[in-house]
Image (tube, rainbow, N blue to C red; front, side):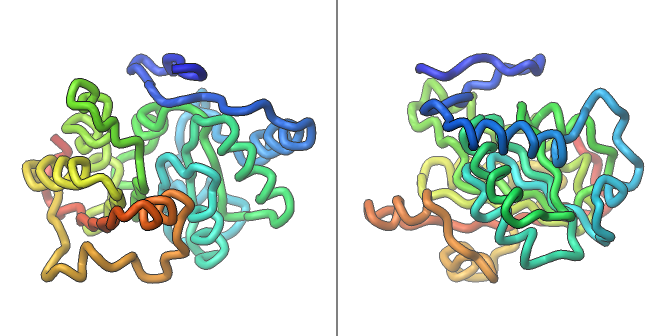
Length: 238
């Protein structure tokens, strides 16, 4: 596919890196935004991730694949006492997010523009209060399922960096990926699925602002699922 290339990571990244050409102001916002908000993984991670932020924060959450940043911006603005790290290797999505942060600066935001596995391996153990993976690429063809981000090795990564009791949230409108994620998380000894009745996966998360992907799914007749898993205490990462 045009725009795809392997990541700089030792693990292959299969998503698109670029879309349409950026306008000069977008490119400038991207450059300045990464200078201000970008994380440098060549520097060891701090033991306390709250030190990464200009604002005083008491918790840190991670969003993997934030697209254009609508949800990430909403969460960061609605929760100023929480630090947010956003990962998006798609250049155009990162540019859109950086343009939004340029208009309304976010002192509780940091970003990373490459493979999320690099960031997960850089983070210290038990350092995150939550991970969001919202509408990830479903790789619908069975021969491509191995490319899905939810996998045993990545759940091991999640388990290592999440604090006991922290949550992993997954949203998708693709039934096969929802079932895939349920099976992988239920088979993993470090995670419990927080669901008592159907409303726990049919209803959007509290304060949910919606996303472009969700709106498209609903227009096309696909009903999203919103899964929430908790990191069990006293369980090894894998």
